[in-house]
Image 1 (cartoon, rainbow, N blue to C red):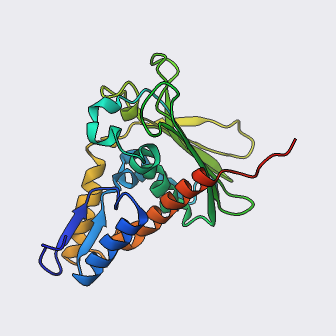
Image 2 (image 1 turned 180 degrees about the horizontal axis):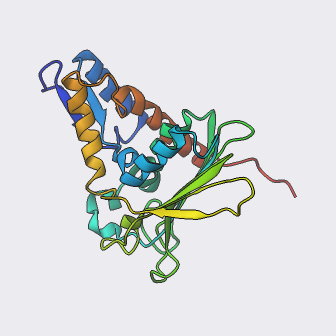
Image 3 (image 1 turned 90 degrees about the horizontal axis):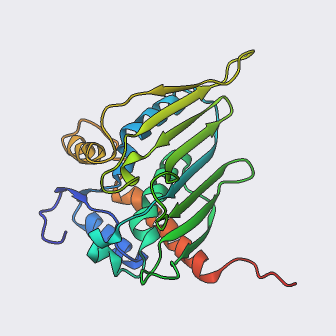
Length: 262
């Protein structure tokens, strides 16, 4: 970054540093050099996320009060040797996608509770996490990930679910299932209608998370740089807040919850 000309446009691969002090250092360099800098948090632009955001922004599911991400798959970490040895594996290199995604829909949480865990028979630093966000008394947001479901494809799960006062949306993230082969995504929604039983409808979308979502992050930098838009969704100024939540999740995991006295 320091070698780039001042004012350059740049898309930086996530994460924005491995520790919060690195994130802040990156932010300061971008500010000092006046870079048009964004982080490649591309899940925000996956086709099923775009579709969900459209329905929510149109008010079709009412007030969004519940958001859940659940992943229970077998992840072949051996395909990513540089990640396998990382002391902050699961949240920093996987659940960070969902932390950033939840922020993009619900804003910045008040606090976070988290626990990230090792597998008893594996040398990896962490492969399972639960992250619960505090958005007050009515809004629920949670991430549950398990990369150790080594029991065949049949009961693997990988989805994002949004629930509102008038309807709900569910998106299957097929990319993560039976990885690296993947399965087709699935996008469904249900809009409540007076006097009718709830009915789920499926919409077939073009594209998937990989590689199509990358178009969103790349084009957003290009369009901002050329003046076509004044919005840079995954700017370093925004994603630094994702990194703050990530750091808070690790702190919560290390410190643990309230001790139970029996």
